[in-house]
Length: 593
Image 1 (cartoon, helix red, strand yellow):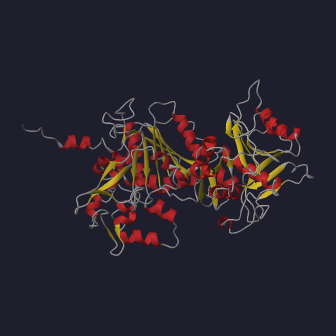
Image 2 (cartoon, one colour):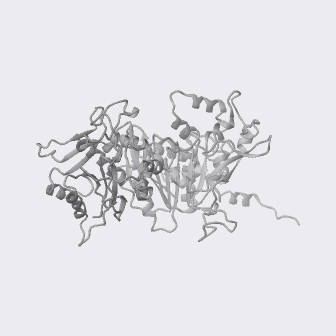
Image 3 (cartoon, one colour):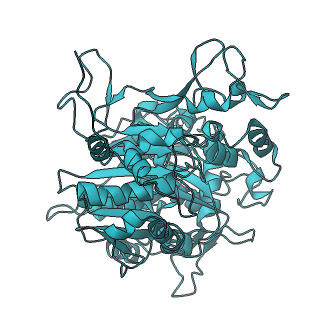
């Protein structure tokens, strides 16, 4: 049977249907006027063509991903008739991209000039009948009050997560929405890695010409060092140690390693509606994920990779993020709930002599209780109502322990906590966070003779947070009285905090500009209320329980600067214990109330 002939016109029309083929047809050029090709960049073909509604790319910088994504979004706006929001970390980043990439790519390609209007600003491009909005996330403006069919978040790990969340929330009313995340990663459990973990985790598999096995050059599961012969500075098969050529690398293919994506990459349609696995039992993932490393870039040699690893000016996180395209897993930047729960002991807290109550005054109010024997209880208040005032619950604790004090953040509920403070002068203190200073003083208590400062305490935010984390990493320094089940929810809040090393941006956002220092910051990507309640407890212990315990020890992070109020001792359970009943509604053990 003779197959029907395919005309040149039919081939030309077919090439309009996929971005990579369309780029080839029109000989699309980069901002520098070079061909945008998929020979050396073979690993970019599938991500560029993928129309899955949810995507996550882990990639190192300077591999052509951003320029490819710019062209892809221009194609989607024109061909798919989508309105698009494209975010970058700051307005300066947006302006730089518009001037150095978007405008120059359009200028290099006549077909894109036909699609766009010359009078467009750096904030938007009209493409046919649709618009691409370019926005920074660290800005005084809130997320745009416009609808979109697609949100693209470029360099999400450096972006303001609160603004990203606002964009996501505003998409929820539209059932035909899409969100694509791509970035060089930072640390595990943050930014693009959150979405990568929900994806099918496609890796680039290379067929070894020697053993004919398909292998991954570098991933979270396979050590990159096994793919390089360091003596000969040559890429090799990690299984048989045979050499791999550039052609071998370019001939690779993506394969999912974590189930499969539920969406058709050609059109984004759900192939398995209502199902959590395929009929064959393969787990279905919502995100289409791609991991790219510099080992896949044939213009970057094994010698280059080794040199970057050995560069004395680059640390492990740099190599992991910028070379391997992987999130850095470093204990200094994260503290997991598993580590926190190592501090749990079944001993019973005597709840005397002085109880410190750390309170986060958001909605709902969260609190933690501790004394010199350990941390013995946590809980959260119900939302206020006509018949219930959460501050009555806090007042009940002040009445229960006549020497107890409350240390609460001043910026949540501005009214309720101040009323309680007025009713209990000298027992309720409001905390202000400040940028870290290069002094020995981490905590500054307000002068009781000064009307403006009485009842206040000012804390170096990141230094105190770091010191708290160091205490929790050293089991026994801060004891959690009870069982691991009691403290599981409380400890889970520590899974949502991470440390980031960075300098202030040239267009600083609210975080860097107000509460954080310029060397390191502790940030969150989820609820962290109980983290702060413990910090407030430690602040209170520093002043009111110094004769009983030292809550902060000297550590290498602070280069030996003493910031505690005592020189010895730890927070440990007492030897004379009384047994108390369990109090429902929180964690830990507390006498029936």
